[in-house]
Image (cartoon, rainbow, N blue to C red; front, top):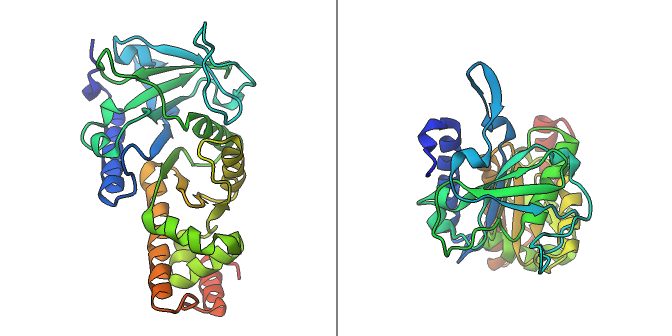
Length: 303
């Protein structure tokens, strides 16, 4: 049985947004091969009223394909299955995510393919009420020999959504990719530290301080998928909407994918401006500190 996504216009609309963003990432060269991943907390989106009773759309109602169940990782460690049971050892519960459902990109998916058929490259990850196990199921029937697992960055995504649930607020979407100029910029400026990078980026464009008022977080850890990378990212996202992974890429958040993408787009634009100034022999060109402070005070109320 294949899901009739037309019955769930809100979910179909979300998939249209996923396809749009995936296309942007591929066309900009920010998601080479199978680079990039995403997740969106869609718990409130899937709540609907049927026969005057409020119900939640669960993965099993979407497709006849089998639903895989796994235990939740508590730390940002790679998902290592038990050889006999196939489960991942439970280290702690993500209790704030109990009963939540996330739309998550599938491991190995290419953004160029996701742009054409997002329903084939995303799945629904539903966390049981205890916060200790999850099920992951496809939105449509998949080929029998095709591996179907969540993104390899799932532990990091789960911990970020746990953080957002703890903090409250509107952030529900998480997007990771490899924006070219931003990565190049980190090679040149990372040694100066987070504060210095923010100062240089704000000097590049008058609206940087308006559109990314909290600036960027800088993560120095370079090992992809490591616990240190996830831990530092969580700390950074407590106070920033976007964190840069030195020599790797970035991870951005927002109330939806469009907002998360916009943060990346803005930061990459000012990074490109910095690289052009540096190539012209003027790496310190740009607005003065006094000018940036004037803009910030006028729009954000802080010097």
